[in-house]
Amino acid sequence: MSDVASADLPRILERQRAAFLRDGSPDLKLRRASLRRLKAEILKRRVEIVRALKTDFGQRSERESAIVELIPLVQSINYMIQHVGHWMKPERRHVSACFQCGRAWVVRQPVGVVGIIAPWNYPVSLALVPLATAIAAGNRAMLKPSEFTPATSAVIGEIVGAVFQPEQVSVVTGDGEVGAAFSSLPFDHILFTGSTAVGKKVAEAAGRNLTPITLELGGKSPMVIEPGFSMPRVANRVAFGKLTNAGQTCIAPDYVLVHEDDRDGFATAYQEAVKKLHPGSYAGSPDYTAILNQHHYERLKGLIGNAEAQGALVIRLGSNSDESHVLAPVLLLDVTPQMAVMQEEIFGPILPVLTYRTLDEAIAFIKARPHPLALYYFGDNRVDRDRFLKRTVSGNVTINSTLMHYMQDDLPFGGVGDSGIGAYHGKEGFIALTHPRGIYRQGRFNVATLLQPPFGKLTDFITNFILR
Image (cartoon, rainbow, N blue to C red; front, top):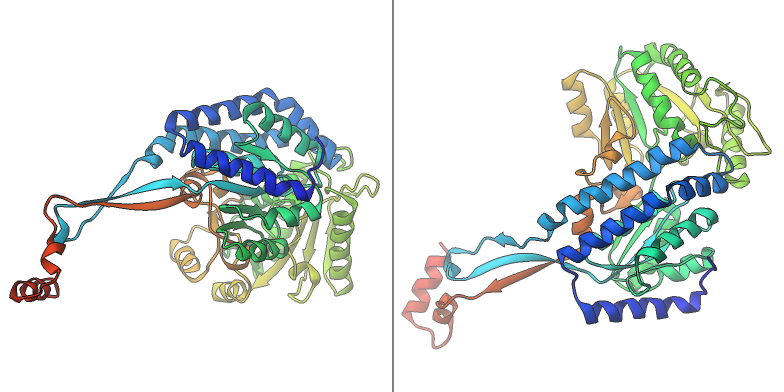
């Protein structure tokens, strides 16, 4: 699949917009048929997808790709097929007492053409779930996959080309220049998934066109462990969340806050959990993912070196492979907030551990930083848990596990503040990519006619009655 020149983007958009204005909003039957064809093509190319992902990452488990990319994607499409009919139904709204002869309702109207910008870390699901959402909402879409996963982008282009006509869905590939031009187009909505830094640029470009945006960003998602909680129980779930895709996950637990008396117990349990998940060598492992490219590999090594130079205890849980940029899991103890690893999103298999003396201290630490995309709490004390949830702000929360909120199709997914704007998944995605069109139908009798000139005593009576 060849890259698209920036100059060609407006033409593609105008072609889609003209088709949307010509054909109008697709009915339920057509939307479901499009979603079913998309699902069928994804399953048909399942082997191609996981092999392309392995090509782009150099080392990525085909089984893990099926679990973290295809299962959430197919489940999400199934959920939309099942529920989109209900979402499309007009919603009856209240009519005030003075207008009881009239009727009011809201219809969710597709916005038109949606621009989707997908990231490299989960290049299939984070491209095609937003696309399926746009289709369920009745829109047309232009999709820009990441230039850092070219083999996967090519397969996505083939899937879309086999299912949709170009005036319904188009895939646009290219470098950062094409991406910048893409985000500057006057779409009817932009859905971006990626870093906070790039998200700000997308928001700025969209603002020039007054284009509504949904930004799914990232940040540092903390995990808090209640004092005395079972460390073997928590460690296994943290290791799973941290090492899935080698930590290249926007909702991976970024750092751990554990009571000072439990730090050593957690460190021991985490090392044991990691060994159980990945008992062999990391280089060449069929179950472990490499860091996407040399740039990110060196960036992660730099974070470790910076922490070690400032006094952190570095516990390396395996050997690296510089040649294939495989970074074995690392546990960091004696971490301070000033270290680089605590200043930026890690996006790799490095787990810093910080301690607290009271739960209020842990809450204050989180509140002093930008709102995270995800928040994790491990504990069975309901009073402490509820206090923690009430006093913190984040995108989504998983209690006593990691990542699992993402798998819930009936929960919105999105951040707040630096971690994102808006939400999608399920019904919230449908709402985000539609316009709530309010409609009022006047009945035979209209009280407003009694409030028109010439005014008189009856006007005063009705006005005073309404203003009681």
